[in-house]
Length: 519
Image (cartoon, rainbow, N blue to C red; front, side):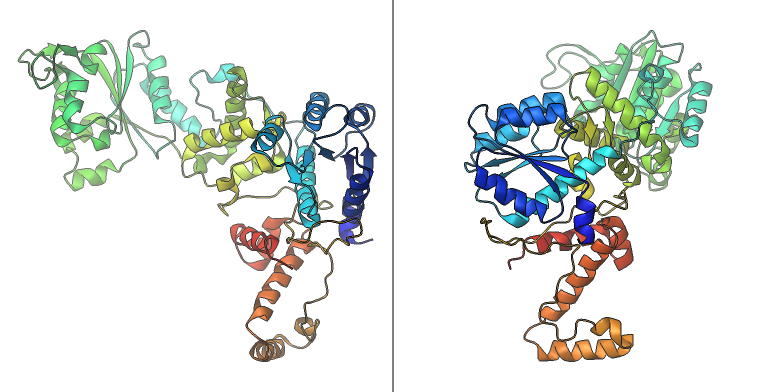
């Protein structure tokens, strides 16, 4: 028995189909890889097996059977165990079939007649998801959402410094400048300052200066008189006047035009505004909190931002750290987000597998907390049970090649895509999969590279390249090295990429190419 077969022998695959030949043929293909095979001839019998025995690690099930259908059986099975990995089989690949299969929580579906490599590749990926499920930590700490009413989650040293400054400035009326990358949560910081201030009972208004056209922003902030410009059919109260005795948050103030900056400076200096088209001076008592992701100091030097306004805004400065600077907060942030989604009935998933969480922790997050929130929402929606697995994370995250770290059981290989092959027949012999020893194509000396010195091996290889038609030997050597590295690391792509000195994204791209090659 090969290493791969021995590793797979700990996994049970249940095949549910009313066709004896399908159960035999599919069982033979999967059994050849070492999986333990169990069968059921109807949906009802499959449900009983799920109820009575230990849960199978993977289920292949026909959609059209005598008795209850595969989709009905799928729903029954998942009501018993929401984390079952079920692959449906059908000879009719309609849009409705695909939509309903995924809607009811199928891992995937395959078409009849079967492609053995497709079956084995899907089985390996689904078993990998099962292994991912088993990696979920039992002792993961849960945050108490009541402790984070402002929505700011973080116990890192960087965030503790932010909280300290908020505590120092909140009770005053001092102007605050909040800086940091886009998506770090600057508006949450501003709202938190307001909630802990003496003005918390007054109005709080957020204005995105970058989202309002330059010719309208003065009217938005200061209001206008009737007839002051085309379309001004009535008097309008501006944001500053509306926020009297409260707080206004000017987000992206670095995008504000110089002319408007002058009027903001007057508000800060004198506490006075004038509506557009008006002559009356109006006193306002407003606290200003501003935010930007731009370098205001550089803009001042380049005369793109008023120096006097900069100093008026920068009385107290709070720099919000990027998510990369506080990765230890990611598990708590994710937990908080999932609790919120569940409470709002937008998703059911409540936690992540260890490998999925490790991927989130090691990803660089250029979009910061905002991007993390989008990823968590996406993953929670597509998750089939209450646990988010690696397969539920967005493809863009997994294909980034940045920080996707596998947390694997050394005894269990990760799924490796297999090349395409011919449709399955009852007598078909499954082709070799990555992880098994394969005879080299027609390379004259299979032990060449491991034999003589490295230099002489290169000399010999180069001579063979010149003699052979085309350059297939080069691609073969690359493919052989990649497959050996994947096999040697038990399918751990992160470790294999490290051994080969390439990024995981490059490794995955090569494996995807091998999966689409013809025989």
